[in-house]
Image (tube, rainbow, N blue to C red):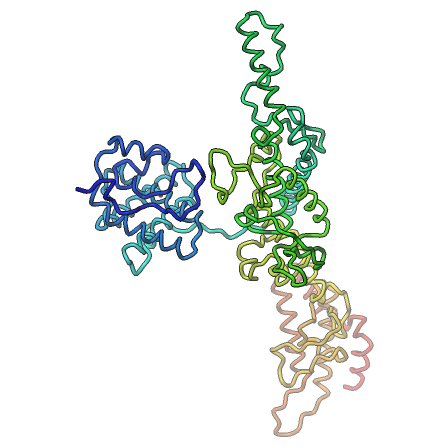
Length: 576
């Protein structure tokens, strides 16, 4: 008979666990309701028989899931990813237990489709789940099912759940300034915390420790003293009853002992607070991944000048070590001050950021930032490690305007930088557009061309130029008609000048006597057709331009030509 003692191993012994952490296992999923139980107490409930017998039909599929997860972990997969996958699998089995559906190798696909429908209902009806969270749930569990069953196609593609768009939207100038302001305020808070918690204050400062902020406020920290502040500071003589006076006296004694302890047993909250601030500041400076940063080990660092900062390496005699990270030059004094601080507080620990773990939490597990609550109390936006890295990358991209250099500094490929980290900025885009058109739009130069209109003085033939037309060379007006840099002017004066220029080319064509039996086209004829095409386009574009065209035509009929062409036209007419 199958029992817990005869079950195949469904745990993950290679994971790093804290002293009091419950080991991760898939065993609870073999029991009805086991996946939804608290991980800390489900083992006891199973042992007491409160979850009933093992569901033997579930075992083959659970074993396949365990094999897939163990293989990914052995192949170098992340422990954090494994824990997320197990949590998503527990969510799936918990829903199936509530729906009274037995998850087996034969039923898992149909139950998965029903589960995905329930996720969609939570998005659209109950509105207690975001589209992105639903997709992550479905994608992670779907991938495990695909591998476990050897499916040739992804099962999630047969559901109605799709990946929500993640295209970053451009920040308006005001929003960009606000985002920068929030980051600056958060950075100032981190600096104030670091300055306000030197080693003597952390270990021997009077409680509560008051950390002064540059805006005039304070952070008050009692270092997790377990009694209320009021009870700790009340004079026992002011209380009415002997029992109250005795309780207040005991509370005051406990507080005095807590305050005078001078070790990390009571002062770890203060030490952790500064380490959190230093860790976030370090990530903002180096752009290092959060999971790597808080597990860095203390080494004999050597600094090598590089660009506007330093490459930090491990000192290895005459042989230079590998580059561990890069910092800006202004950050080096602060970083060395912190290293000196942590050596005094943690003389026997080799982690650079040795957060004191309570309740047996494993060292490789990321911390839960206490700074979040402090920021909330102060009304300051908490900037997560990922946002700090993104802000750093976008700042570098803005300063260098060079994606290749920025990608190299951020240790990404250019494609990853542009697709994941770079955020469009309306302000930067406006500046780039203005710089582009300032360099390429002839209309912004206000340089008069030899023909009516504007240009930038750089001849560039149009791809549509006829073979018999005049080639643009900034000396012959006819050539301007087929120049890429020539620009029309939206004014009556321009239409009058263009009509006058057409009159001059008409006289030039009338004076030409082509050879007999020749089909050659005179360049003047091609110019007349181009000018006529432009004038007709102006005429048809709006009533106002129609009036300009009519007035210009009347003036030409009356012999009133534009001053730019008047003398040339009258001189050419004498030759007719």
